Image (cartoon, rainbow, N blue to C red; front, side):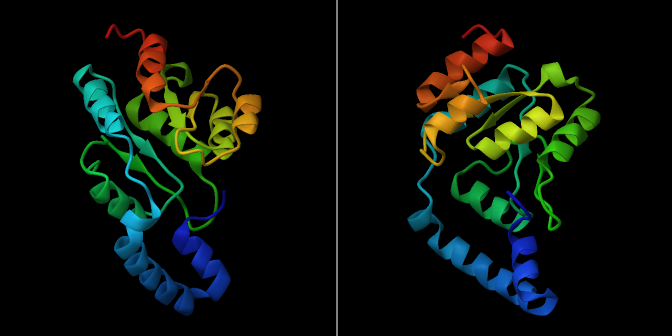
Length: 174
């Protein structure tokens, strides 16, 4: 999508004003989080915990910056659940590089990694990094037809479909 929040504000306003704008953005983001972002389906938290109990490494790769990620993780009660986080860059899109860095850090091969995403840009990043992606459009944030075109046979529209689909791909018995 582009640079993270800070990077976007620096590009728009320059260094000094961009930093001020970012601080204001963070204040508003935290204050209005509940109003602007619906809470995740409770099954997501349960699925993450269950995956971890079954020995699956769960990491977070996001294009967001650390501050907004931390706010959202606290708000959604997901803080502390991810083994490691790879976050966005002020310079621009870095998900393919983050995916490759995660593979290096955890000594895993591309075929042993599955990304759960919700956008066409996630599909593009995963293809660039050579890994599998399951697209979940439960918030309806992306055009379903575009997701299906970009990720045929791997697009889910309800979070309830994710667990059995993912467990089957991972070879985990429920």
